[in-house]
Each structure stands twice: as C-alpha cells, then as structure tokens.
Image 1: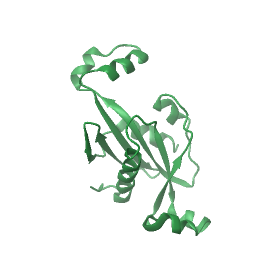
Image 2: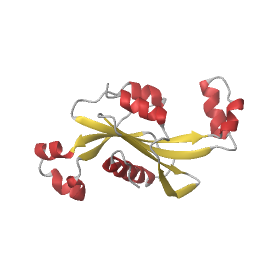
Image 3: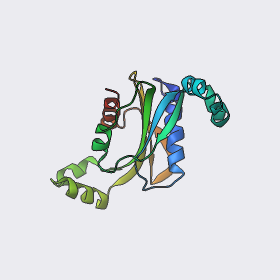
Length: 169
C-alpha cells in the first residue's frame, strides 16, 4: 500500500486517517502540517523520545487546531504555510453520490447539502489527502459502509489536491 510517488507520504496519510478514524464518524476537517523531522529534532532533541520510530522519517505531521468553520474551499483559501512546512495532510469526510444523481441536483448550495445528505444512494467516505510543497501527492479513503478497508488511490480527490497545493503559493 505505498505510492510510487512518495511511499513515506502514503504511510503518513494512512496513519493519519487511522488516527482520525479512531474517533468515529461525523468529525470536523482535520489538518496536519508536515515538517522536516531533522529540523524539529535540531530545534528540540527531546522530541526524539516522543516520536519513537517516527523520528527516522523525513517528515513529521503536526495537527493544526482551531480550523475555521465553514465550507472546505473557503477554509483552504485562508491557509498559507511558512517555508518550514514541507507539506500537509487533510483528513475529511465527504458524501459521494452515483453519477446518475447529477440529473437531480438542486441549484442552491444549501439545498444541495440537504439533498445529498438525504439521498438514498449516498456513500459516506473519509479521505486523507496529502501533498508536499514539491508537488508530491497521495490519498486514501475509507467507506463508512466498509470500515475495515482503506483504499490508497492518488486519483480520488483532485479538487482537494488543488486546494491543498494552493496553500503553498
């Protein structure tokens, strides 16, 4: 289950999805900065004790607290990372509908949310989307209907990739 683009990034995305999954469903968006582990250890060598085996990785995730509330596109539009942040991982829940539902979509955003939430063919998924400043990316997803399976697929969240990459501009 590793990405040909950057296996460590996939491992981190999988671990963070599992970490968030431990709290169950219906959670808010969770965002993690990815910092260079060597820089963190140079700043505070005692972190090695807390990181354990993760201290051997090149990147360490750091959860960002107090994200604004609102539509994900707007939230991502307010984020900008300092140069020390090499990447980020977003773990969020989405509602997925079959292509046949497109013909029924209401016009207003408020109506779309209610309609999608109540649609009989909806699927709830949790995705972990990871990107780096240098352009690497990966993602994984878990379906609520099959909580025991996590699928790694770097092509499942194009809009989220774009939104996360934009936080580095």
